[in-house]
Amino acid sequence: MSSIYMETTNTGATAKAAIPVLEIFGPTVQGEGMSIGRRTMFVRTAGCDYRCSWCDSAFTWDGSAREELKKLSAENVWTELTALAEGGFDHVTLSGGNPLLLPQLGSLVELLRAKDIRIAVETQGSVWQDWVLLTDEVTLSPKPPSSGMNTDLAQLDNWVSRLKEGRPPVNAGSNANPPRTGPAYTLKIVIFNREDLDYAARLHARYPEVPLILQTGNPEPVGGETGDTALRLLAAYENLLGLVMERKELKDVRVLPQLHALVWGNKRGV
Amino acid sequence: MSSIYMETTNTGATAKAAIPVLEIFGPTVQGEGMSIGRRTMFVRTAGCDYRCSWCDSAFTWDGSAREELKKLSAENVWTELTALAEGGFDHVTLSGGNPLLLPQLGSLVELLRAKDIRIAVETQGSVWQDWVLLTDEVTLSPKPPSSGMNTDLAQLDNWVSRLKEGRPPVNAGSNANPPRTGPAYTLKIVIFNREDLDYAARLHARYPEVPLILQTGNPEPVGGETGDTALRLLAAYENLLGLVMERKELKDVRVLPQLHALVWGNKRGV
Image 1 (cartoon, rainbow over the protein chains, first blue to last red):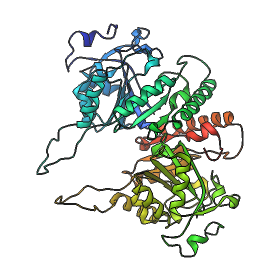
Image 2 (cartoon, rainbow over the protein chains, first blue to last red):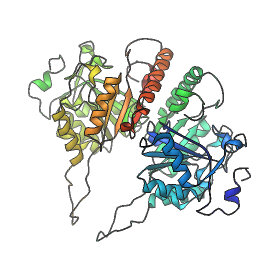
Image 3 (tube, rainbow over the protein chains, first blue to last red):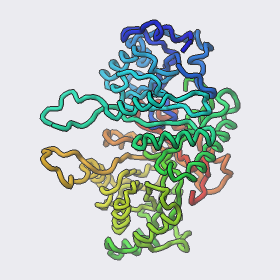
Image 4 (spheres, rainbow over the protein chains, first blue to last red):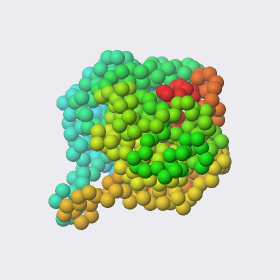
């Protein structure tokens, strides 16, 4: 939990604290997961409690991008978003790092909701914040063995159970059994090898009702020609498809590549 | 409407008639549309009322695959599906041609529902059949100007309105306002050029509440090395992303390539 970017959360952040932001960009395409292909804006926060061996956004926690770090209020973030694409977006993706380290991100979530913007958030599910229930799409992305990280299953159980429960209805009226509200959610697991696939299969058995997306790992997240990277990633995707189709317990999953990596390699800000 | 494959529908098919089938294959990946990446089985029916200039399944209507045509009962189709993947599938995609030419496909839809199999169907939305409302996912794919086809907007209006209405609840109980049931549905439009994108934007304005997916056109649906095809398709996808991001009225769309074409080129049966 030591990081140059973590002072805010480590020293008792409140819902009013500034948000440590590394990138705001768009409009562009969401290249992965449940809303793959969706036009969106990205807000990438700084700081992570994980150190995945193959992290494709290590600049959010390894100090290499410290010059780019801005501490922004929710209103500042909105100003930057509208400067990029005023009237041209209705969807914002909160990514990291791990945005769930930031209780103060709730202020941005509330502001975006008030503006009728759909909100997606991605996290490994290691730290809960109540503002999650005010978003629209939650990608829960626990990290498989190849990452070098350990999954806290009790914490993940807590996430799944709270997402399933959803938000309490604001006004149930006379309906004795008001419909659940809250974000749509999926599990997304990056797969580099058979051990990762076994891990995914175990989590799928543990949470059979949560849609599972398996995502091709990107073994060389930095450098290389875009065309070479694309063909290598497509070969990895084809290989993963083959492995998945052999396993009946994975009969109801989705298998996806990262579209942005296919198109742009590992370039940032697209 | 003349085709060697259309005798059945042209001569007064009933719900008991055999189903003209050209391919049954899987398990494999759904490479496009709302369930992109989903593990599924494909049942491809013969016959189409359209003749799109760039059709990637012209063998379903041009007579070239007449030797492969089988007339199958719903039970025959089920037998073939289980022979391929017994216990290894819970999702079947009905594709064509235009499966909506076949009233008798309702028998297969009912059989698959009884087996707890999710059903996806793809069609241009030119011909309605009531069995559509018994499926789970409907991809409505009207054809843009580059296809050389004309869209019957009155018919498309009818489709959208009936999908919106959904199925009447079987048992509403004491609930005065029972929730709508019926398939999830999206519009998916293949884009080859700016004229196609204008067409998509007009339909998006006409049906703003229907999620819109824009899909990269595949300009050389036959032949070529897989790697070359992939890089060409990725370039076309990147180009389409650029065109879409320029247009604020397309702020809420999804833009997707065909994953199967990226991985396998234009090979059949994968």
